[in-house]
Image 1 (cartoon, one colour):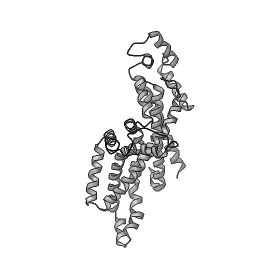
Image 2 (tube, rainbow, N blue to C red; image 1 turned 90 degrees about the horizontal axis):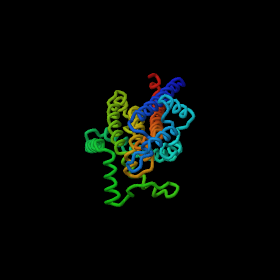
Image 3 (cartoon, helix red, strand yellow; image 1 turned 120 degrees about the horizontal axis):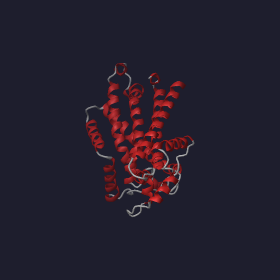
Length: 318
């Protein structure tokens, strides 16, 4: 792998992270509403203007926007995301506590989606027009049309309330009760995996059909090679390249899409502090969480690009 290509990709990822951080910073400061006033408001009663001014000065909100932006970038360079405006708790500590739970949910959903979507797509392509192909394609279209929060609610209603096979939601650390932890993880992972499995099924099916129509596959068939060898050597390596690209994009998308799933199943990931911070105009917390999600999105796509370049060196020429 070319070091120049890798350095260029790293530079692009860092530049995109800076752009995202700047956009989020400016967008939040343009939203109507005074964080100091919101923090001091209780029971719908307007706070004393002097108290609001004092809190604004303490939080540094009275400084010019450019000065706040400079402090913000300086904190990022030092690895300091600041403290929450609501409870004065370090943003980085809150993210470090909750991010592993969100990542666990995403990894579980991704593994489930890959294990279902990719084999089903390959099988459907090999039996194009058959009963399995028609049924699986219909199910995939249906899953893509149903919002994730609807699927989550239906899973709670069916599996937890009606059949009582799984708990409705909550969280227990794995070290405290491994079995209960896995039970609580199952339903939200299924809710996340449903859309990913449907997308991977369609991409895998289309890509496999495209490769099966190439001349080198027909040549291998004419030579009398077994279907298993043709599939392993000639088809999968080429058919899975676009699947890897889509998988990287979808894993990044799941980082932002788990908010509703975590809310439905009461999973204590990044969604709870994010929603609370948006409501309270907690600038440091919102920026810290959104920036974390954005950086992870960029990191996942960078890893996919590197892996793709290893599998197909022609990618480095692009």
